Length: 451
Image 1 (tube, rainbow, N blue to C red):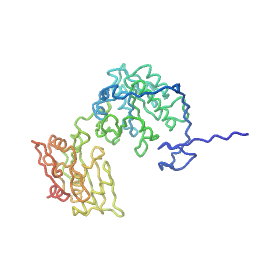
Image 2 (tube, helix red, strand yellow):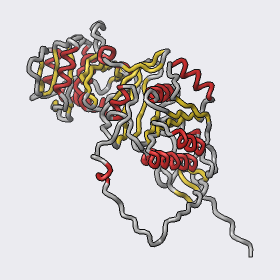
Image 3 (tube, helix red, strand yellow):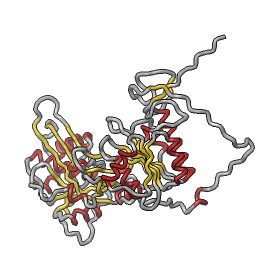
Image 4 (tube, rainbow, N blue to C red):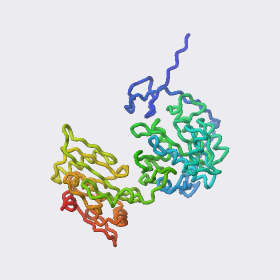
């Protein structure tokens, strides 16, 4: 009797859901053209006796609960990580091509190598290419070991032999596992490589940092299980036409996800920006309609950034809404508030919004300065250069308080701002040398800014 033909296993490369055949659209997550053949996982054996009793020990018996940290030598990276790299951790760093991920990882590896051996594994570049880049960045050192090999098994063997303080794999989409079939970057290979690196990190207490590619819509490439299995996910982005780069954590099991690190790309590599407010809020710019300074706060860090808006008559057809660095839905809401509660006819206009320096604003505290910038452009009346604002705007036109007001006011005072428009009942630090104007509604904010 003829044996039945084995069925091929299929799975979605986006969400990892199994399928019994090819589909144009994944039934689980709805992604298109993501169903691919998935090679069966290799069989795993165990030598644990059937009568063995496993008694897990309480985790607090192994320490005081405070994870050890490995300083990277780059203050901005340590800020985002929560104080440094945690042993046994897996960190995934993603970003668009050409943004500087490999540059950041090589500089970070050189910083950690100042205190001991570091293994930098590259599946994309040869050893000579990595050496040339290290010379340009000034990252050479006797403790920085480079492995130009796509085989993850060779990486794990070299790491166990060397015993490094840190392993960097650049990138996970180019590495392959010996016992797994499929092309590099495929779902099966990515999972197998991640399993090997996770076993290395947990068994040898060696932290591993992975570089990951992103898709054209900015999402990390590969199955979503990749983000779930790692401990920290860092996003490195910015405007390729500008020198500013932003590092932020989207997942961090050992710290906050509210901190950001700011860098400037130069010929000598990435340089941390110690005082970003001086670059993002240009106090010497000429007064022009449509610009307002926002006192923002990410984590415990406050800085000033300029938000810009352009409101122009529609040239025909539906009005355009083009937003860079701010949420387009938030801008649409602020336009409706201006129309209903501010008495400005803006809903039929073309609107363009931008954040200077290539930053992306996520906190609702940016509502008030963006609302003032929109009104300034529509009225054709510039706001004073020394005016700054922060506050959340509600649908009823009220201005709500936001956290970290004292840090925002202190930063505005340090940068020489003379007037600050804030929500009512905002706690003002004693001795602040700035005029604080408290407003309760959008109409009051417009009157305070334009009279």
